Structure formats: structure tokens, C-alpha cells
Amino acid sequence: MKIFIDTANIDEIKEVASWGILDGVTTNPTLIAREKRNFADLVKEIHTIVDGPISAEVISLEASGMVEEARKLSKIGRNIAIKIPLTEEGLKATKVLSQERIMTNMTLCFSPAQALLAAKAGATFISPFIGRLDDISHEGLELVRAIKQIYANYAYKTQIIVASIRHPLHVVEAAKIGADIATVPFNVLKKLMKHPLTDIGIDRFLQDWQKLSDKEKAF
Ligand code: G3P
Image (tube, rainbow, N blue to C red; front, side, top):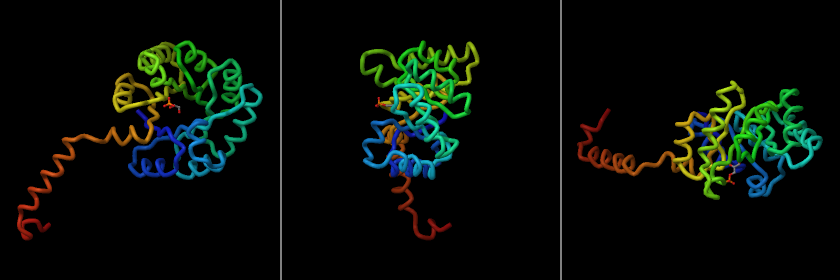
């Protein structure tokens, strides 16, 4: 499974890129607003750090405006994926952009029906928001399972980005289902690495190592 980071924060992106596990970035207007910087400049800077897909979202609600914004954003680089909400206008825009070979990420997906239409419109990615479904007592991961099955039934090429991830188990379950990608907030990525037995094990190894003489430690 590919791992994207769900942030627009440059320090977080650089940090995770340095771990050697980063396959892409997703942003949204909320994440951009946190950075208090010019949108295009921020996306351009992310583009200098990451080779993989970088999602940047359109603001227009009409297809023509979405396509116009998408064409401008796509000039930043071929790896910019245009994030488009799952509306009728969004479908129209996705169809046009797919014909222009501009990558699209249909976002705010809360039902298998929406995901089916996104694939038919030629979306490169679909983003089911599992945490927001869990928040209203629906099983977010069930949505991912349903999309996976539908896409497999018809060999749709649209890749599933599991989004709105809240904790490490969301990532592990997404991988067990076979999602193509999980887009993970920085704090959850850090938790993914953590295990108390690893820390205890390192402490014990270092304590035992100190019992050796300098001659015994030499290598
Ligand atoms: O980037 C989209 C998505 O991951 C948002 O997550 O936590 O705002 O539901 P959240």
C-alpha cells in the first residue's frame, strides 16, 4: 500500500520524506488555510520535495470553474492531482480532465454509489473519508471494502485513497482490505512507528552493551 501524508505543512512533509516511506501528499482547503501562505506557492514548494502525486483541491462549484482551476494547478507539474468534490458538476469536470490526462482525486466520498460514478467519469483516485463516517456511527472501513469489491468486479483503474484517517488501526485495516493508498496525518504516521516493546528492547540492549569493557566493545 502506498502511503501519502495528509498535510500542507512543509516541515511535516520533509520529515516523513526523510524516512523514505512517502509516496505522495494530499491537501485540502482546511489544511492549506492552517499554513497561512499563498496556495500556489505552497503547492509549488511541496512539488520540489515530493515526486509522487500531490492533491490540490478546487474551490469552484461549477464544472467550468473547476476545469479552469485544474488547468492552472496542473501547470505546476504532471504529478498534481486535482481534488474535486463528488457532485454532478465534479463528475463533469473529472470527465473533461481525464480526457486531458490531468490526474483527478474525487473527494468527500461517503457512499459506494458515489465511488462507482467517480470511476465511470475516469477519476484517477477516489477518497473515501472513513473517519468522518465513524464520527457519525457508520463503519468507514465498510465503505472501503465496498469500493474495493465494485472496482474489482469491473476492473476499474481508479485507485482508492483511504482518507480522513484518525488512528493507526485505520491504516492497518486499509492495508488488510487492499486499498491502494492511505493518506495519513503526521501524528498518526508517528504513532504507526511506535511500540513500547521496541523502546524497552533498545534500552535493554544499550544497558547490556555498557557491561562490556572498551576492548570487548571495539569493532
Ligand atoms: O484530506 C482529506 C481528509 O483526509 C480529511 O480528514 O480528518 O478532516 O476528516 P479529516
